[in-house]
Image (cartoon, rainbow, N blue to C red; front, side, top):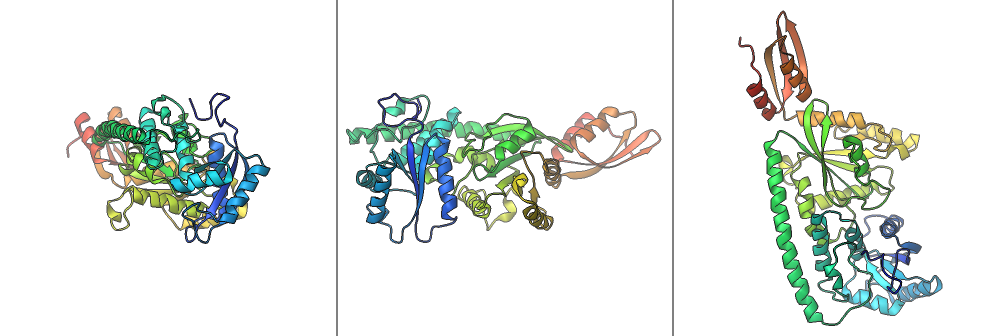
Length: 441
């Protein structure tokens, strides 16, 4: 049962009236306050909350007790009374003490950015692995708080009840239950990681490159994934529409087969619990041959979002500024160009022409997607081996095999013989030698 699908006696239901605030702390503003408020509102809307008001507070000296100043806390309490607010969403990380004090002084149920994101993940994770990771992250987050009931631990579906009622009894029993539960979850996740490692090892033995889509949440990764694979991954104008890793086969020009992976979207200030808990999921990115960074180029904070994504990749160990030679190849895709005006498109096009690793597309309309696929093929082909083979002109099977799986540079017919210069991976050349006989000089 989801946290927003409770009985009439429960404290909150889907559609609860929420006040979203963004406390701008000294030296921590990577994006503008309007963009942060808009993103926080999007997070709230993603789990069906009704955002009644949004407000930005500049915090010059964070208070250990409430984070915000006394006058700001009183203003929030007044807004809560005037607008009949049910829930206060603080777009920042709160300590347990700050959360409890804000609730007492404003009279509003309070949840911080980390709790809100975890609540979304609790509702959305669809696979067994995803739910294990979310629950572990939730327990890690709540371990030092112990201000909620733990009856949700036995639930089989739905969110994790961050917005539920207080349950501050039997603290020691709760702590023991949390520790035991986290230990079991970690064992189960280790088994999941072992299974995924075996699957990756099998793929590595096969001559199929792995391409991972990464990007800020709502950048359009899933729409692009569906366009390339004709899959039906949830793709909505909603934050965190995709949580569980999805992998599909993809056809590219001159490439026999490739594997495309869609991943969870990143956000600024991604909770540390989620970086750790979703490491197994994001290992598909770590082991990818090519990483495609999908950006919403129409977003007002697209550059800041890019920096946030790259920082998460550094945190995961995917990117290492001091070891660039041993990292996956990176391709940046500027998505949603259909939302740009003519002048902005022209300016961006000029930038793209000077950068070989940047492309402009619209996953929604399909504009530029064919060029993107051709570029992926070219990147894959950079590691290929170019060889010439001589075949009988009547050997249509061998010729068709080369055309289907490689890039043909030239094909010369001389009476009954055909000389073909082709580019294939070393693994595919090995397959070709085993299946087809060449004409010796």
